[in-house]
Each structure stands twice: as structure tokens, then as C-alpha cells.
Length: 163
Image 1 (cartoon, rainbow, N blue to C red):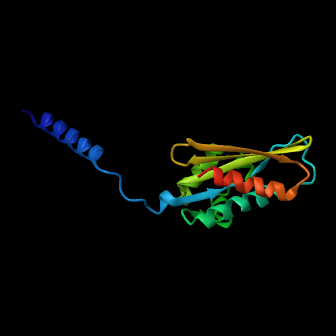
Image 2 (image 1 turned 90 degrees about the vertical axis):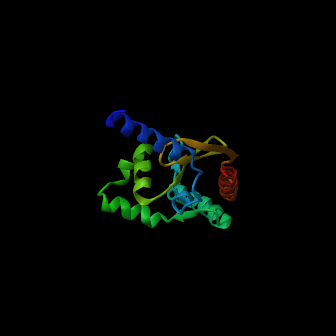
């Protein structure tokens, strides 16, 4: 048998053995999650400044209560943006946000948005695996538009529905 055939066979054996190996225990990165402020997707942008941040704080509180995930704080996301000299307008693209998530060590990210149309508010959340960009789960909630506490409660329930 030639040296090339022996080398090729050795590579195949190593690949086979690695594919048979059991999954390693849960690492720190596998439990790390980043939450982005929810985007206002409403046709009318009426005086709702900082609402996306307030709603994302509800999601973070749900995660902290679970104690299953380590939440990457918003300040760390902003520091990474500054370090890379990226403006927030650059982050409109979800792919860019996922790349940033990889840089800061997040395994998962939560994206979402809300829409106020007529008398209703719709909240949409997505749990996305950073490495693949695959949406693991998506949740939607509808509440009356005039009830701010209802918005907070609906966001909390939507976040709980992701897990």
C-alpha cells in the first residue's frame, strides 16, 4: 500500500472517530445569549422612544429568572460596536448582528420587533443560533395598543414562549 493511501485512510479513520464521539458537556458559550432592542416596525412612529429598549429589558428579566443562560449586557454590545467603529445604522442587517454576536461570544441572540396598528400591538420575537443564523423558535403576541402594562406582560410571555 502506498504512503498516500495510508495517509488518506488515516484521515478517514480520524474523521469517523470524531463523528462518533459524544457531544461534550454544555460549555459557557453554549449558554450565552444576547438580546437586541426590539425594532419599531409601526407605520406611524408616534412618540415611542426607548420602547424597544424597555421591551428588551422584559426579555432580559425572563432570562435572568431562568438562570439557564448568561445574558450579554447591552453595554458589552455597545462597546463592541465602538471598538469596531460601527454605527447603529450598520446593524440593520441581521447578518451583521450575528457576526457581532460571534465576536462577543454569544451562542444565541434574540431579535424582534413590535407594530402598533389601529387598536392593537403585535410583538414578534425570534431566537436565533448565532453560528448558523437558524431561527430556533419564533413567537408572536397581540395586545391592545393602549395598555402599556399589557405590552410589558405580552413581551414577557413571548420571551417565556421562546424556551
